[in-house]
Image (tube, rainbow, N blue to C red; front, top):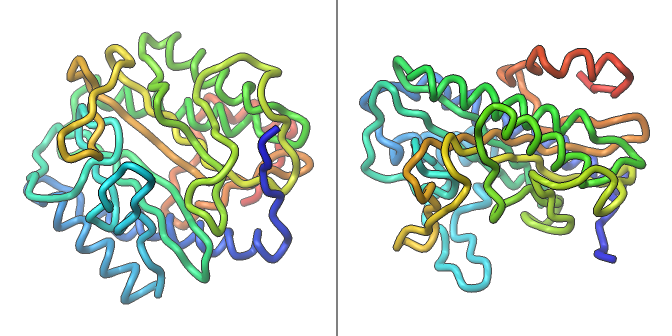
Length: 278
């Protein structure tokens, strides 16, 4: 049995602050995402905001898991067929691009990890639909979170919704426990069977961050050692929140003034008793 840490009330407070700051970086960068800006410029703006305004630091910068070269930037910018870990640089965004910005800040030793989709200029119907369904997938997964539920419940509802809409779920990357450590147990798979895997306990904190492809689920790694693309060049989308398990449901820790509201599809589920902290 893996050891999943149960956070103390003080640690939960620290995670609430880090989560809010992580979300506020995404609020801050939103007006800058438009045709003509480079992903490198968005990274620079995010990094400066963390350093100068928040007094937080970017967790990805120089992050180097075993077998990886240190990640060179403050955020991840994944455009169109990039699934995750796109490195900001000279790429100029154009109208119709679908962009995921993934932000993790460290504040007082705690990590706040979240990502959002941004549709640049006039998006295609496909990009808009894929982003919407992926957002619904994340929220359907979140709606399953409460003490006594299982990790498999989260993966199952995400996989079901994605595949029902003709999309596929990336298997190689998943959500993860988080706290003073960027990535810790458990792994939160975005596919699976209900009632399987670890049982959730109040005080666990982890991310739910489905990566959903418009085409097939197979991936390929780029020569930079970080960037992951869809093998068939199809569009990919991702949304991410950091979530606390409570006795009665969940609390989203990556909340800010600009956090998009839950999608209509989950509102009936949330009213059935999952306690959602405002």
